[in-house]
Length: 460
Image: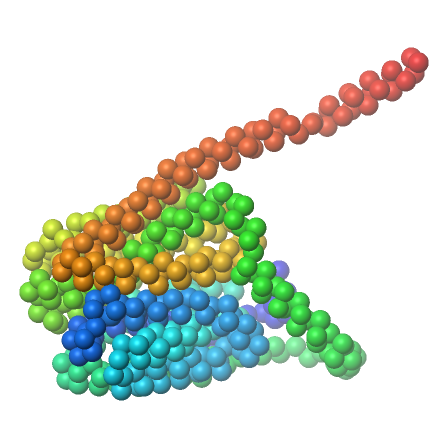
């Protein structure tokens, strides 16, 4: 009820809100799955444009980095104009970027249109969709968010084989053209996100006061909003928090190695002699498993045994994910690649189900929005460099196994770092709390001291 009072209205928790969830499912699905599913085209683009493995990997890296880096700007635009026009604008940017990229004759051309323009469009879709759900739902918000976020694995399951089919029929240029048309459906999804209308009927005196105060408060609110946004995303006081620094280092190591195996999985399978459609289905298998692992991990993490130890559970998920990549180069047959895709989906889903929950556990609800904004911006750098670095290893050694060794070792190291440093952090926190307890004077001490001083004064 308190949260409803803050909003100024009671959220519907249903009704048209479920249509909004459906629209968010579409826009979020395209946002998270497109950078991964585009890897189906990379082999053909590489041969047509004469690009190296490192150069081709920059396409997905730039797109992902632009999607995450555009978060603060997207949030400001959503607060100013609402979710509906922003999602429609994002859908137009995504569609036009793919259509325009289909006419590209150089890899730089694709960097700009697919990576920068398309990534910014995905950023608008993602943030606006998450924001509108919070306005339509309160009691049923976890369910609504879960259904919307399920768009990521669902769309990955569908887009991977669809992209392979389009590639066989139309080539990579025609495929991008058709994909651009499909992404215009984000505009339709945005049209479903009508603004929430308050049905309260304020009195004439209230309306008059609002009109009189509007001009006076306009500039003050604008300045305050800008200051709040700046503090939210540039709060350097977090770097004084030991737990935040530990989380950030481990998280950056995971992000550096997380996306390259997805980008190169299909190409690696083809290199092992797997048929192209079967190679594309590996991504679908990963997405399908991810779809069920994320909510399952959330349930496990919420149990009374795991909840107090969620940071260690996160460390285990990272180590499990990295170990899968370390074992992948030992695989020589398609059935074992399917097993790898299943375990990859399990590890990937576990980590991303916990990644923000662990940050909230460390920072608390009040500091979480500022912390997640800062983490998202910093994550852009390892996300941008990870896949191209992995591609460079393929260029240098001519073998994909070094790519998986690098990603696996970095992620396992990050998981071990988190495990060891969290033990240290909790030990230091307990030690600091004991020291504070000992240094804090008790009420009885003050009473005794006061009586002793009064007695000493009387005797004099």
